[in-house]
Picture 1 (cartoon, helix red, strand yellow):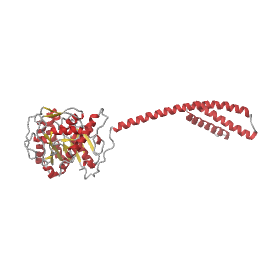
Picture 2 (cartoon, helix red, strand yellow; picture 1 turned 90 degrees about the vertical axis):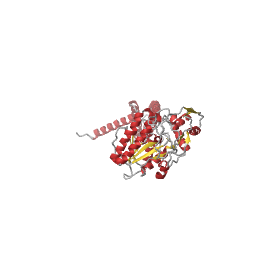
Picture 3 (tube, one colour; picture 1 turned 90 degrees about the horizontal axis):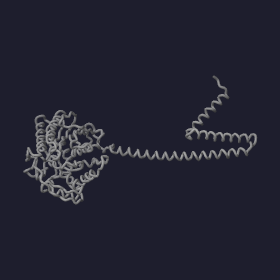
Picture 4 (spheres, one colour; picture 1 turned 180 degrees about the horizontal axis):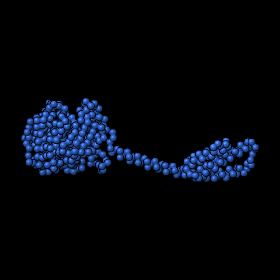
Length: 458
């Protein structure tokens, strides 16, 4: 089909008109405004056309034209005013929408902030120096601080915990990191995994917790230890058993050296823990002699610091919570019993040093500075700044009267001794508990995270 030139021009003009209608419709937002715009455009075209005709043929009745323009101009002005009002309404709606978007963005940021995505800057280790390290009970108080240390060193860390006393939020700042893995597992059951080192810390450690289920406590320290020693045997891993100063019981020797065999009641309320740890040590050296398992045994004395369980019944947590709430500070007994308290970072340093050493006999890890319970209660009350009264309650059965480690072995073979002063450690611990008590809902995070590698390396 062949079109004439005139037909082609008509089609082109029609296409242009359609495009103009579409553009004007999008610009003004409604067909009515588009019609008005076309009318205005038509008037302008006629005006131009009249001007052109006047140029060629002279004026064309100027008076009626002016009147027509005046009448049309009024209509256009009214319409423009109406359109301006519509535009103002739309602008107000747009501003309101932007406010709602900003509120949603802030809510999203708040929700995202609950899951830390920026990890502490860890050291990079190549595959030759990087180790795969399993920490049983790694979501607990001491275990979580050990996780921080080893992660900052650049190792791959695997935590196995049944969350009886451990809490996921103690290690949540590492969740998602390529070097970290968290396994919900009870070590009473075998665990099949490939690792280079094992820190066996899994066990309730405070009297209320290990007395709550004494049979479970014994199983954890016997069957759980057998499973970890069996794992170490299968994969050729080095294993550190976290023992306790409780193996000395209520000691007759003071201070307590590693050569002291202890004074323990095998059927008392503490026996599930005390004897469980003694059996764990026996199992360790049986595996070392019979199966050539590379074992280390750390006898841990009283330790304190952030992430302690608020209801664990220990001296430090009890005294701090009571002082912060202006309650009476309760001592069980006369308060003349003695304890030695080490800050958690000192303990972590000692365990890492013991694991790295070639020394295989048990090693005491504790602070040799001995204080009475009464003295310790007064120090915490003064640090908190409260006016809590210190009162005495009946003594607890089988409560050790004196406790002080002899750390000669640790100094000689590990070049280790505690470095954090008591007041410095208490300031950090009190601040942690203060924030914990101030929480009113789960979204208020109280995460104690390592700041820099230098803070962990001493």
